[in-house]
Image (cartoon, rainbow, N blue to C red; front, side, top):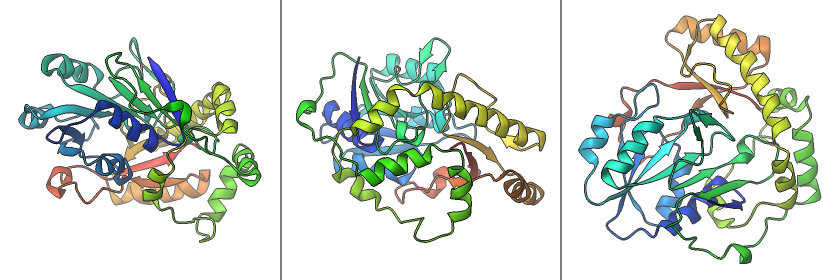
Amino acid sequence: MKKFFFVSGRIALFYGLKSLKFKTDDIVLLPSIICKEALLPFKKLKIKFIFYKVNNNLFPNWEDIKKKNHKNVKAILMIHYFGFPNDVKKFINFRKSFKKIIIEDYSHGLDGKYSNFLLGNIGNISISSPRKILPINSGGILQINDNKIKPYFDYQNIETYQVSKIGVLIGKIKNLKFFRYLKFFLKNNLTYRKKINHQNYLNQKKKIDENSYEIFKNKNKYLNKRLSVYSKIYHILKKNKFDIIYKLNFKANPWHLPFYINNKKQLNKLITLKKRYNLNILKWPKYPKEVNKKLIKSNKIIYCVTLN
């Protein structure tokens, strides 16, 4: 197993895909529930992909995968949505049965476990994005778990991402308890919500900055705080009978807590809870245009409470 620390999960995925050395006719099976930013490395490297259906429990529709699996399919992407384990055993069986590569996307969690597996150790390669979980300015990890796969890049000569003194200060402020409340009051301020050009992220082919790496090495104290927040929010939603997608799982270190809204009454209740508990709520994902609407027609809208 080899780990490489980059500026973001997107860059980690870019270098991981390069190392798999896809040929012109090779295809990757991608889940239909996916954010548009995750497609950028595939498109940049001109890798062909086909989407497979995902059920409302966020597990794959294996019948649909069976129909789309053919000789040109080289790999399948397994996403641990929001940091919770996906259908791990069936993915492993799929790899064994059809000799395919698993690209494990664990960018929504950190140091989670499932049964005897550590999430991030299952795929032939895996990527994670600790900057989603920790108060750091940069951070994405490429983990190569298959000894047959060699890094197709010169890690030592990749430039380290440089963070300004102001950036380091902002990182420290993010770690203060009042920052969550400050975000709540500023979230509609246009100067605070600066629009990000996600395409530019692929131009930042750099390693993690030194300050962020030091924080990463002491990640457990931050993960324990997040688990405490996760538990409190879970019980708030459960008490109010929301359709929470995943059961309470302290072996996961989730990014957000996802749930469904089944009627207008619940939506009104959510608005009340948002104000009462100062919750930051969002809808996920923003689908890429490449996803056929027929594939996601039966999928419900996912709501999330952020845990930062």
